[in-house]
Image (cartoon, rainbow, N blue to C red; front, side):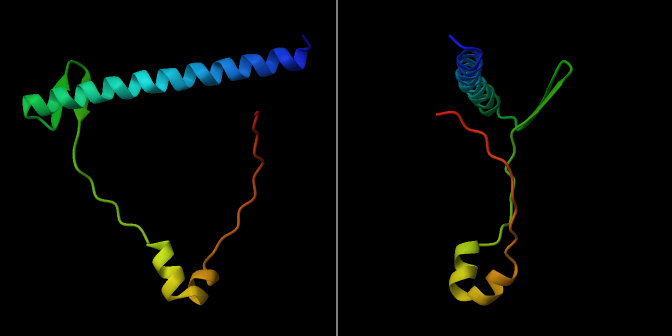
Length: 89
């Protein structure tokens, strides 16, 4: 096996492990949120940890609607960005 293959295999393994850990983290977050809901609390202090599970509101521009109703204005505010993308398939 070449050095390239070894590095790619290692990269893929770490990617798999990170996905697995993300799933475990999300499951734990879900359990904590359920425990807070069951306790009737949206904010708690447990030892040195502060937990919060609160509703938030975010306001965004409806880009599809803006483009459909005011295409010329929409096009004036488009911003192009360039970046390098790395992928292994």
